Length: 466
Image: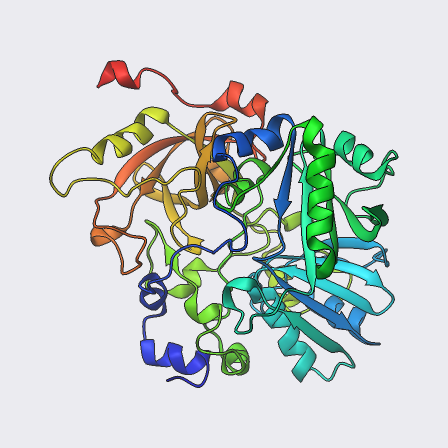
């Protein structure tokens, strides 16, 4: 019906209402079962033992090669490319000319003039657009995520992560030798089950691990070898239901809404984007509502990337970021939700009538691709919650949030408004409900055991208070 995203937006008029009422729900995690065992044990494995994340299906891969590949990516990145050499990787979160984040992916420097980007589609689209229109001598090859593939072919590469306190011991068994002591985001080559494997030194919540990738035809052979070698160290495969909750403990915000829906300087980009692509079907949801889509845009500081911003090179968005660099910024925190208040929401599901709160899914309670819940102090908005779920490891419901600096002090009590206004939106994941308030305690990110001991809210007594 529409030729491109710009036409779709112009026809819609109110962009937030368009995105709030798209029927789709949260990001899909295809290719793996919802649970291999159960999500509680799968969560526990990354906390106490070792887990195998299968990332082979749900992310886009983009190969960028050619004499201008380094220049293209450097021109789009707010973080420095000094000392960025083959065999390294880095976060890549480009921004618009107005300084708003487009997306967040991992950039792999595989070899001279050869890069790969892996993650959600918005940053991939941005790179492809500039490669096609910016006069760069580069070639791009896209490997689309499984959920939206139109062919029945396989992916070009598999991708696994081995994480948890036993990850290094498991890798030693799998490799037959001690893994090299690499710095974070450094790559090396392994041989596993007789096959060459690329390995990135990775980690979550301070624990070491590896991301492993190679040609798709080796997928099953490598997966089998990892699970067999890791069995004695407690390795479990992670299902799709569990996968989306792991970020709550590690503290990475996976879902910034791309800030590309407005601005004359981005009109050509919106005309290049398809109407039915990621950006045109990006559902937003939650208790925060504004009829101005720019109120949903985020900056590097909102995501905790302020320290990455370096003005040692020219890049798109530099002028805008320089203007706000020394201004107050929201701070990324974890919110530990008050168990009594969470239980009140759950209790409302058992009451007749139409006064029930929004249903809380476990372990991930995210019901839109881009969650935006209001966090208030004294009834006034003081921050935004962007990801919500339950950690069986911490026995806590928590969210990843961005708080105004004056309300980001550890131990501060704030209030999360749970549920959408006016009974809910048109998303298929949203039933008729009422908004409810949940107290929360501002806590560190990543959320670790010391945070639980020092800052967790009231976690007992609900049954006796009923």
